[in-house]
Structures are given as structure tokens and as C-alpha cells.
Length: 221
Image 1 (cartoon, rainbow, N blue to C red):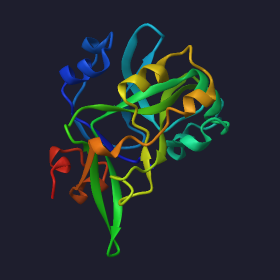
Image 2: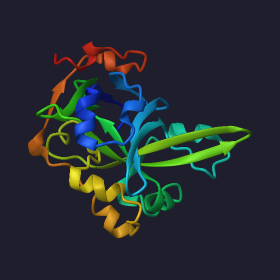
Image 3: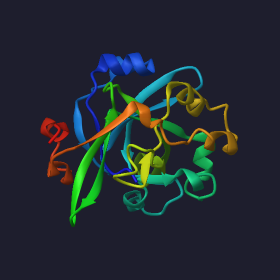
Image 4: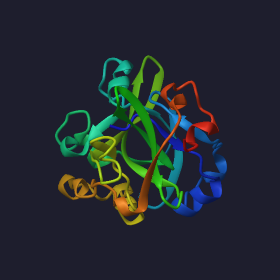
């Protein structure tokens, strides 16, 4: 699964990576410990322009009777994303990117859980494959998302058996293209990211609490 991540990259690097049409309108601050139920920086496209904005992490399907379902839907498995009722229609029409520069997983070591941060070796910003939806009830509107996960690559597998789907640039364009709606083709994009470009290191247990969102969290032990 993916339960925490970081997004600390400068706005210039984000613009270079994603070429957004509205980045100057957005207020981005470094996030060292992004947790479920919080707002996450995301990207959608109308087929011509890519726009950045914020979605609540934890999918609340438009048909849900209770918005609290989002706490149970922070991740969607790539293997079943085209068959689960909560996700299959969104796979065709409401795909997004969720921007990050690292994510956290916990490894059991001698009965204790040691957190690790996984990132690109060159520290560049990247994007998770996500799905989003809009829920409305009694005058309240929630725009929310889920992060798609897949099997772990060689870097992550020693820590955890799952990892978020990270899309390289060429796959990002396909994923965001609203004209692409064939589930089989879309599922082929949802593969483990190449381990050659990634690295992992131990970090402080400060990350265990979502109340802690400080730069010390991303420091290596």
C-alpha cells in the first residue's frame, strides 16, 4: 500500500516536469509527511491543458451515502482497478496524477517497524497514478482521490510487497488523455517503476505521526 509520502520539490521543478497551465495560481508549500484525509497536489487534463489542484486523499465515490468511506479507500489495487465498482468507471473517465518526490514504507525489524523513504536517485519529482471523483450531499462537495498500487520493485520489495504506481513521462500523457478509455490498455500502464532509478533509506519514526510535518523527517538516519 501507500500510506504516506512527501512533496517538497520547488515550483520550478514541478513546472518543468509537468508543464501545467495554471501553476502560477496555486499556493504550494513543502510537505514532508502527507497523510490520508489531507489535501494532495494533483493533476488532471482536458486533453489539451494540464491543470494542477488539490484533492482529498481517500476516495469518496459520487454514489456513496457516507463520506467517511474515504478513510478506507486511500489505495486501489492495479490488478482489480477495472473490476471493482468504486474504481472501474473512474478508470475510464476520471484519472489523475498525484505529485510526490518520495514515499514511505515500514519494515518489520526485530519486532519493530522501521520507516524507510523511497525516492528517485536524482531527487526529481514524480507522479503516482490516481483516480478521482466528486461527491455531493446536502450542499457539501468533496473532490477526492485514491493512489493506485502494484507489486513492489527490487528496491521496495525488501521493505514491503506493494508500492504506488509511478508513471514515467510518456505514460503520464496517456494516463491523463481523456480520449483513452480502453481498460486493458490503461491497465498495461500500471507496472512497477524501474528499480534502477530509485533508492531507499531509513528515516526517523517522526513520520509515524501525521502531526509531524517537518523537514527532519526526510533526513537519513
